[in-house]
Structures are given as C-alpha cells and as structure tokens.
Image 1: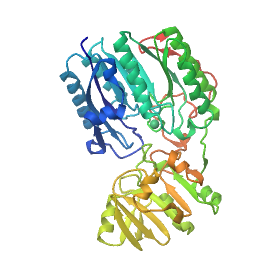
Image 2 (image 1 turned 30 degrees about the vertical axis):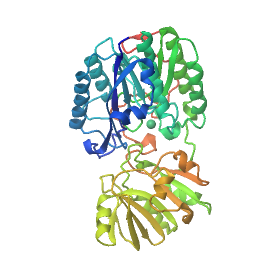
Image 3 (image 1 turned 180 degrees about the horizontal axis):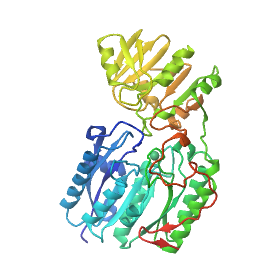
Image 4 (image 1 turned 120 degrees about the vertical axis):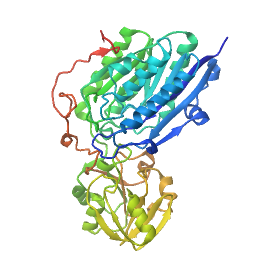
Length: 466
Ligand SMILES: [Zn+2]
C-alpha cells in the first residue's frame, strides 16, 4: 500500500498586548528536520505514514509579534505546504496566544491558510497550549485537537503525541473526527489555574475520565491568556469526538465545571505586594516571584523595581536572577559602574550602581553590589531551572533570598526546600487582573465583571450543536 503523506510544523509564543517589546524574527528559534521529528517522537512509520517536517518556530513569550514577520513566516509555511505532493494530513504545533496588531485571530489566520492550501480532504490535527485562545475559524478548519493538560506544563511531548495519534489513526483507519468547542466567560492568570492544586486539579483529572467514553477522543479545558486585550480572549472547552451529540455533552460538562469553580481560582502561593513580602520574610530560605515582569508569561524581564525595594530595605544575601539588560552587560565589560532597569522598554526605575565584583558567563554578568548578587542577562530569559544557577557557579546555599522573575514557580524551583511568595509587581503581565486595561475584551468576563448566569453554547465552528 502506498505510504500516506503528512507535514508537521507551526509557531508558538505568548504575546502580552501590554508589552512595548515587539517580537521579531531574531526572537524565534526554528526547530527543523530530524530535531522536529525528535520533538514529537511518534512512530509514524508504524502507520505507513511519510512525514515531511516543515518548521516549528518558537520564542520566549513577549510582546506582540511584528506584523511583517508574522505575514512572512506564515507565507513561508504555506509555500512549504504547497511544495509537497498531496498531503493526507497536517500536524500543527501551535500555542494559541499570539497577538499581532491588526489581526484579530492570528492562529485562526494561520490555520485557515493551511486549510486553503491542503484542501478539504486533508486531516488537520492541532496541538495547543492550555493558555491558548480558540475561535470558530480555528475549529471549523481542523479535525482533531489536543492541548496540554498540566500547568506548569509537564506534558508537552505527551500532547504532541496525542494529536499525532489522532492524526495517524484517522488517516490509517480512514475516518474523520470532529472538533467542538464552547467559550467560557472566565479569564484568569495561569497562577490562578495551576493544575497541581484545586480546583483545577480535579477538573483536569476528570478530562481523562471523559476521554474514556466511547466516541470521545480528547477532552480539553483551555484557561486562555489574560494579558492580551483581544475580543477572542476567554477560557474554552474543546472536545475531539466522532459523535457530535456525545462531544457536545462533554464540552458543556467541562465548561460548566470550570464556570462553577471560578470563585475558587486562586494562586497557590502566598501573594501580596512587595511591601507585604518584606513583612512575610523570615529567616528560612525564601523565593520571591517578581510576577508582573515574568518573561515566560510575556513580561519584558528588565525591570528593577524589586531590586530597588530590596536596596531600600537594606536586606542582604539576596540573589536576583535575573534582570535583562544588554546595556548594563556592555557597561560592565568596560568598568564597574552600570545602570539597570527598563533597558528593553519595560519601564520602572533606573538604578545607577557600582559593582564590587563581576564575572561573565553564558551571556550573563554576575555582579556583587554590597551583599546582593545580581545576574544581568544580555538577553531576555528565565532562570527557572537549577541548571541555570549551576552554570553560573551560583550555589543557592549562599543566599537567604532568591528573587526570580516568575509566576508560579517551576517544578525545579518548587523542589527546593523554601518558603515562596508571589509578589504582585508592575509589568506587562501584571497579576492584579482587575487593574489591567480592557478595550477589546468581551464585556462579560469573570473576574472583570461578576455575574451568575452562564449556559455553555457548543459550536462546531459553523453552527451551534445541541
Ligand atoms: Zn502555557
């Protein structure tokens, strides 16, 4: 039997519409060829399927994607799709929270263009982040959908494989699944919807139970992305099925479960202002998350407000990892005086400091000022893994406090015996949700508005499904 033919690729990032820093071509890395196949690691050859890897471009979350780059990269993707012989399937790896000025639904545009290129008979299966957004345009152009079921995300590859399996099975066994969705008028931060604590822990566990039902292939709950002021921004339930009625029932059930739990959605960390953090500090090793400037959620990562507050309090043995500033890094290469804060456009105070000592490693300057150590990174990046500190020869045992630019702590940082505090700080991903500006968002969304009635409407992308 002739081999079936599929293509794989996509684009993934999260874009805060509150960030001044546009993402351009140089902000993305491109996973291609064998690396892209390894990323998914699915045995397509067992299904008699030939795979054509295109590219999977991804970046550290940030501001809006530059319109010119988005158009270029989307066109490049479609040109590649057109270069293949007839495709039986496409596996798209998307995030779902791209923001491009002038385009209401960037992922929808991308997916619609793919559908136009491959034709109606091709099966399109999509892998998504649970912080992504859904629209009718997306749903009506795809045949299968799987999103992460954990946040922090520890099932990324598992999700790629779930969407790959649905694609391979549909092609091999010659059937066509269907994707249904319902918008849910709730929009909170990832920190308020961790799947490792209640109420989301139980809601997400139940998704697996729903998957076990006949004719249901994959049940998903997307919490959405709160820091993009867009019309499409809401939570959603998304179900891949082979029976519309059963799929619609599952979709409604998930939507209602999340809606009913909305008032219990809270951060699993002690939360407060930075002044409250100073009162909370005790002698035990503590981690403070500077959450408003967290680069993994779309913050710029260059602000120095928390550093300034610590200097004012005269607290020592603190490690700041890190603050992004190419200009401070360059100044430190020349001498020991430097300015830090807002150098990528993220705002906040600018501090003029003098280093007692400095060394350079991995595109970082590790600076001692009094008894504080600051990691100044040439590029925007997180310091969320233990390896990030080891690579810089930093031993956390030498510090009383670690300040990281983060929302909920990464699994590795959580594994350190410590107390932790989520500081509600300024920045492009401000966790004080009711204070963020809303111009384009729908008018009735919890917690921006409080209301009691919600009845899920399930759609197949073209019409309501009862
Ligand atoms: Zn995510």
